[in-house]
Image 1 (spheres, rainbow, N blue to C red):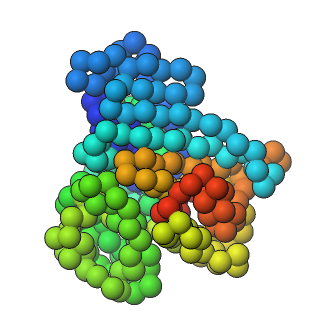
Image 2 (tube, rainbow, N blue to C red):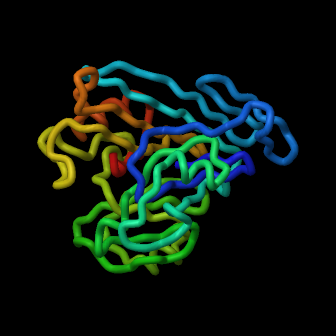
Length: 243
């Protein structure tokens, strides 16, 4: 996700970086109000962010706890500001170009030939990846829902108020309950790995989670471990992104 000092949050795509901050303590403003920035927090009156490091499952896990005053602060940004195949850019670069104060990577849509892509209320791709493919839908009121592409079309989602649709997955938590099994993984990541996920705790209250992995210091997380961790944060809906 990208958090901009002009009051915009965006999901970066076709990237593979961890949470980044590009805020300058005295220069970021929202509606004329000065932002307050510390080593692990940001607040400007409309966006509030606190970043906490955890150590669980023999892995370093970073959590950005985010609240916003309005759902319009949640938006997306493409790598190189362009929709297309295999266009990549570091998350920190996308954040800088977008004026962001916080960023995580997204769904890497450009590595796939199918799967719904809706960004900022516009359909870029409406072809079904698989009838059981789980997508994250972010609605205009800021609420999250996990849907399967076989159950609804991209145009129906847009008509129903979808502003963003991310196609990676799987869903991790639905209605506060873990929805991924201990043995369930995706073809892109069979074992414990670096992970990126986004979750909603309540109205306009979100978390973004990034874990290290595949290093001597951090083993990484399975999808079930990631879901268990996020459930412990009070997340009611969570979705796995490209880690």
